[in-house]
Image (cartoon, rainbow, N blue to C red; front, top):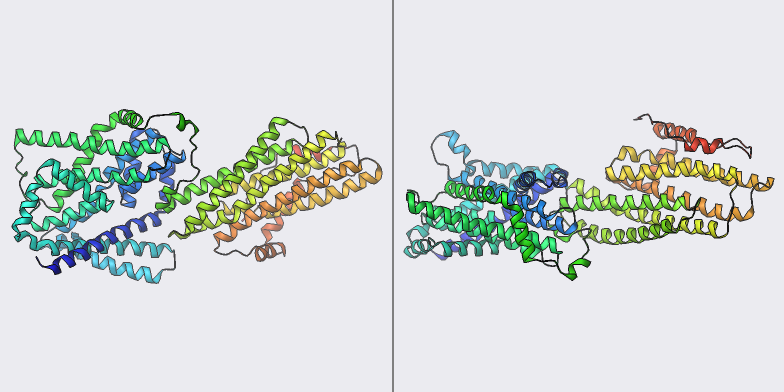
Length: 609
């Protein structure tokens, strides 16, 4: 073996690791919302969690990444510790998919079918197709993502072939054969496997390198088995590192991963060597193959999972004993958005969207509570509104920082749209919560000055407030569901609110001239109307941002001019329908027809194209 073989080996390892990384990230990016949907269905059932961990790891080709996600979810409060245990166990099984893909390179035969099953035959073709799709596709296009997956797989297989060819001369080196004979010592083999995986931060990569080493003929099953066991222990280092600085349950999650693999290794080695002592396995000293490595890797993970899954609560208690509760933990806060999830951008985007939805819900609740204080003052509700406004400010700061970090990641087109939508809307939600506090101050002024509203004024405000609650509810619901069609119904309703504000002012002046209202009431009325109108404006901003970002543009003025200048028939129909729904009582100062109409449930809206 010459120095040039070493150079070739280094290049092969580099190509192999880069191909695996490229394929995994491209698979995750292309999966996008599907992966996010899988992860959103967390369950307390260990079996469901096991299947979830398998599915996610099979997609992103990394058990370490799945475990880090589990740590991040526990740290964010999205998942309980006992739920994470099933996911971690499933991740260990899901990671065997990579070894099976690479084992296909060991297929040998002269028939066309067998040769075509060997990835070495069709991986170059996939690489050619992949680079074609990549060059033809637009930036962040799905076609380009599929191209990167194919390129990554082609590089992975090419790298494995280069490694195998570079290491094949080692078969004639006596020292190399003696080295692998020493790995037959279980403790030494476990240690080597753990160290290799800890350095590479990927059990799939280290198993792939072991499979490439089978070309030398020096790797026997007696040496491979303990190395594979050690590789599963080494992969826990990723989760342990990621848990640094996390809350106690997140740290416990990382320790569950460690204990699962350590206990599983001890149990499996005891069973394997115990049975070998009794039955004398014929394959024990045989040369391992790529298929054999994949089989051992799979059997180990399946068997240890089957043995330890019923004892998942024991693993949980062991982790709790390792990271016990103390006085400092009582003050721990759950992180709204965990930076660990940034390593899996599509999941981080999904979490950011959920957090944005929570922020929107807090705004809605705070606003409705604040509106109630203009009719009947309540100190407890006032304190709650102020707390919610502080919470919304915190959400905006955390989300804004997180979204900037996400923007620097390689996102799919759909995830990029989600990030842009959040960036364009969180400030409007924060401003709505500010207006809720303004309404609170107006309500306090009405209470302290004992300002009395006339029946007619209350009726008029009831109509306007019903329309305002409608637009806020529609906006929050559309935002949380990402429903651009529903967002298209916001602007005509905003125009109705603007018209109602002007009409309330006109009717107040008429009552003032007739002596039915007071000037003092006019001051607080002006404050109310100003805040109501601006709240509707912010709802319009949110809806327009959703629609424009979905169309890969952002020109608010052009969009509004288009729909308001008679170029959108649906806008006109919706406006007329909303305008008919929210009308005032006739100009008689004793009636209450307007209030009665506003209090009635809104009729079901007909779907419009």
